[in-house]
Image (tube, helix red, strand yellow):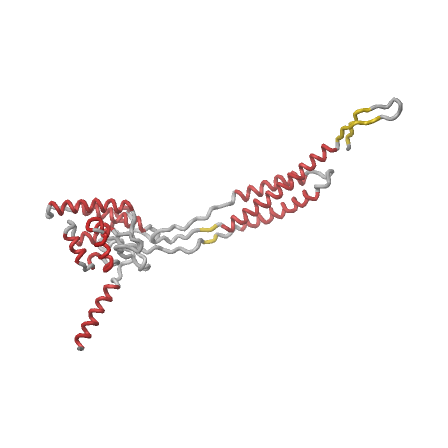
Length: 322
């Protein structure tokens, strides 16, 4: 009985190991050749800001090139044809650029046979295209985040044997994937001190000009200076606000992106206040100026005059007030 219990515990331990794949290097796009593919494509190592799609595409293009250069003299004509067909499909796959996401291991890069959204990895795609999607799904149920060399399933073994590729070559193809970074809200950019203070002072000046112009509505003999100054100052403040309406910068989404967006809402609020204050000053000043012009016209009057007496009559009267 004791031996049976020990054996059961051993089996359960093995099952637990299968459910939790061994930790992998966090920055390698492939377990066989590391980041050699990206270095070959760009001449430099990838950084934390390098888009994951670019890393995976560079690797798959590199792997395809290596596999096409390998001699197939040891293969039967049937297997050689299947191999060539698979490499053609691999080429179309990486050019399309639709790759799975590693949603469950945020601290490391992982292979992912089929992700939660149904996107297949390169090897999973080749299996689905040639053996059918159900076969790929069965492999994914047992080895979703495993390396090809760690997969122990008859379905994959049978497919490799009939593909014209070796297990080592499939391991060369298999990329790892980073986790999608969930970016928080955009960073709020404060208003520049000079712009904020300048806008406040200008608004104060235009408020006083608006009041001055409004006080002259019923005073036709008042000067026009406040009206002209208000027209210029109001127009200038409105233009200042219109020229300071920056658009928000959206975050850089994608795999391993660490660049948040920027929000210029505060500066736009100040700019809208400038536009509103400037437009109001402009309107009041223009109204005051038009009122002065109407008052000037009314100083000159033309009318008819009746003359009394026996020799009286009617005449034209022109009156000018100074």
